[in-house]
Length: 576
Image 1 (cartoon, one colour):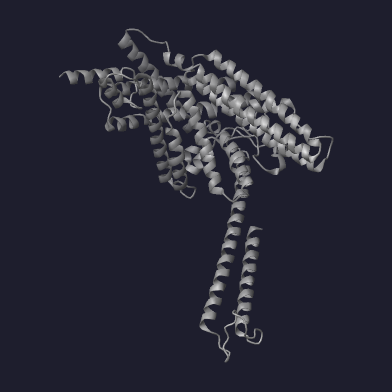
Image 2: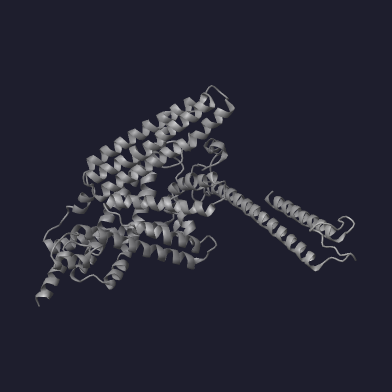
């Protein structure tokens, strides 16, 4: 169909060109039709056409051809983009098909017939289907499971090395886990804050949407008035109730980093879920106001909305594919793996971060120290990245999916095989990517009538970078836009350099190398700034102290005692 449209468009263009050229030549070469007269005719008495007239006609014909060419190219580009969008959606639905029997049992005819109940409204959007997570499939292969065993062995070695070093230094076993206790401090306040956020999301958006849908049965002017009223109330709630108040609680109570992460991540998740609920159900109400079929607009039940708030997805549907029963043993295994990853991260910081930066505290800060800091932070940065992926995107989401019998477990794809950053962004976190694609990218194109695709992509990057940096700024207690700059500049640049046409193992190696280096930069710079703001505060002091503060601030101290030791070195050198 697409090829036929392009062929018909090309034929019409050729016919228009031939028709215009014949008319132009006839008009210039037939003196009988155009007797001499006005300024448009330049025909001599002997019937010869002047050279200037021929040149002007050729230029006019050339300009018309260029205009037609530009119009055709614009139409061609628009049709290609529409065609590629449809291919992407079809590929997503094809990827939704179950894996072969080598990994999972085939679906029965009855199960396949149920798939039609989980199609998106109006035939567009994400398709949900019953499928397992990729790592669950891969861990059934002994070779892949061995890699999982290697990480467990490394954790055991971290624990043993920590116990041995503590016993040699302290003469006893130190099992207080002070870092974890500090990071998750004030946990009761975190629970109360989350409970308030959840109850407000459960009641406010649903109530506002219900009242708005009931108001759409009146006149057109009344419909617009109530749409503006309830829309403004919803946006006010999103910005003030979910945006400002939780952040105010976090900042005023000085919550530690892990507790801040819990509050801010839940804040962002609930905002995205409330938006998805309204965005998916509003077209139904608007369609009913046009057709007026039935007694009233279709409003989802509260139970469906409550299930969606807990479901491991950010795309609302009335129904999702469900498993017949909950495997509580599987749930316990995933929660224990989350706990294991938490302790794994603790030992990574204790054994890989603090010891290596303790040596930096004995020397003044310089470029060499910064370079060594970045490269020494690569290994712990990569381990934290992999642990975060495995703990949250695999274990945590699968645990909740199993408890809710949620059958669509595609929370990620094989991002580790990516040869382009474009594919990495699509496969690393499918849950967030789907929300950004359907509610930011596609809605931007819908508003702009598909005319500004690069601007839509830039807007998606900006939204993602701002949200990531907001979470880090609130959690760490300072604004230090390292991740924002990496995301907006290098992330966008690599998105075009490492594009989908890049194939082969060399591009996968380059992708991993750049990812490693980026994790090292993030761990190094944010950690330095964290300790610099606590142990090298900017304050009015003596010129000697000001000199030390200037040397060590901002962002160049990692462990306690660095500032004191360096100031002592400066004092001794000045006395000498």
